[in-house]
Image (cartoon, rainbow, N blue to C red; front, side):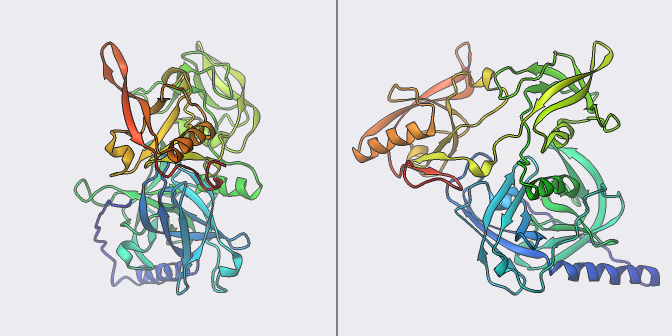
Amino acid sequence: MRNILIFVILALPFGNPALAEGTDSQKTHFESANNYTVKIRSRVEYPFLKDERGSFLGAGFLINKALGWVATNAHVSASNPSIVEVAFKGEKFSEAKLVYVDHLLDLAVLKISTYRIPAFAKAANLECDAKPVVGSPVGAYGHPFSLDYSGTRGIVSGNRYRWGRYWVQTDAAINSGNSGGPLINLDTGKVIGINSATYSKRMSEGLGFAVQMIRACRVFKLLENEVNPSPPYIPISFAADEQIQDELVVAAVYRKQPVVWPLNLGDRLSALAEEPEKKFKHQADLIHALRGRNGPVELLIERSGKMRTVTVTSKARPKLTGRIGVHASGIIFDTESLKDDEVMNPDDFLFIQSVAETSIGALSGVRAWGYLASVDGKAIKTTGELCTYLSSAEAADKKVKLVTRHVDWDYRAQTRYSSHEITVRNVKLVGPHAPKGCG
């Protein structure tokens, strides 16, 4: 939502007393939003995968006053902000800490000192139990185009599955600056979503998307109970079928993940055995069902036309707030655990998370989203070892030769290797809790 713009003109009813009364109620809900909506600004200097370098403005809202927790989008906070600050209406910005970030849900939780929360502030009333009703009136609240604490009205247009996740679709205008703000049910005053994205004006009008609150609430509750709410390891891939898009059929089973599931090709995953009525339609349903579960879980599957129960192990991925990478010459390296690593990265190479524009790395031709195969002919597979090696090269003012690997066609191969000689500068560990230097 940083650079995508859309303008929607909403017609408001006049003359009908019942509708006028409803409008007054909606106005009250917008006014109440001033008590929990905040402004957020962040700066990202060392972006990991799915983050962007730069300074960003967005919105958020208070979800737990006692803990000082504020919810927003992951693309507003990023997973490694150099600084992130929060301001309530009429108040100055205060520094915040990143508690949790989830790129799958586009969700982040920030923490501010409770001493910095003004007396008038109240936690938002969240709709954690029911999906939004299509046709119900909603308001998107935030700071569009720096028009602070502004609301736009519309309806819930649908509950959609797009881009590997579920969304609340709305025709309420969601503009730059609304990201991370609340999507409010104007009948009940409850927050039903977190404003996140919209299609460009060039493509359509009235298509905005918000994170479903019922899925965000699962994360909030787990965090309050000190349980890691990160998405679980899913050591299988599913076959996509354009004709049948509401079932999970196993296409690949991976054996080198932290968990291994006793599934066969062609198995269809149906539901949790304890909740057979809640059918899995998409991978997001499976992920949501396993969040917060660690240990044996029984799944109901169909194999060779017969229903049966299998026991799998559920394990949460590590929190992104704990990751530590290496920065050198504008390049950030880190591990990136993907479920198909045994196919795509069997040698456990470090992943090139990002490359800054106009940096030494970029000028040397290094590209992001590839793997570091070797440094001066040596395979280095840990961030600590890489940081130490590059730091020594920097101290000696010595150039190093990086060999990288990307998915690209070469002679009888689907991967291509490239060599880059770079001058090493500004070597250090980076991450939300990275120690100074090389640790």
